[in-house]
Image 1 (cartoon, rainbow, N blue to C red):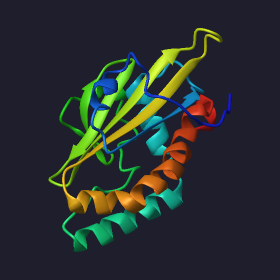
Image 2 (image 1 turned 180 degrees about the vertical axis):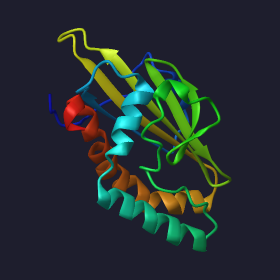
Image 3 (image 1 turned 45 degrees about the vertical axis):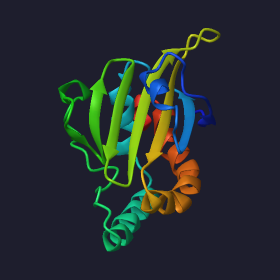
Image 4 (image 1 turned 60 degrees about the vertical axis):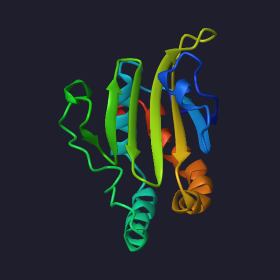
Amino acid sequence: MNASPFKSQAPSSSRIASHLPGASFHDAWAVPAGDPRLSALGQFLKAFAATPRWVNACMSLRNRLGSVVGLKDLGAFDALDPARPAADYRSGERVGIFTLIENGFDEALLGDQDRHLDVTLSLHRAVAADSGAVVVTVTTVVHVHNLLGRLYMLPVAPMHRIIAPAVLRAVAAAPDAA
């Protein structure tokens, strides 16, 4: 299966839904899973391991420019241990640019917090009632705390709408194509 990600809503049954009230930014993208056997975190690892080079270049630029105004360096999207199984990750550990908050089979919550903003990301997997396919939805929720956070989101929000589906595209790839 090789489908394109599509704009979606945060799944109403997801744990991230409770993070939506008061959000400064949120969006959700979904795609049928090319490997429906993977857990939610497994889908995340598959996607981030196949991050397009241009996305990592954008992240590198963000880290360099951000250091000038006091933002922390988050590293690269694909800074993962490819041999480490999803089930081995524990809450509080770094997974790429995020910290793992919760790791359930059908939903993984990851995030990053600082004095400027809080970002929470959900990878949620569910079986579509109409087709029986496993659909993976990535939902991003941002709560901004101050002016620097608002200024940061001015370029990040439109870029996120390009980057999120580009990274999620790998989830649709068959296991041998990833």
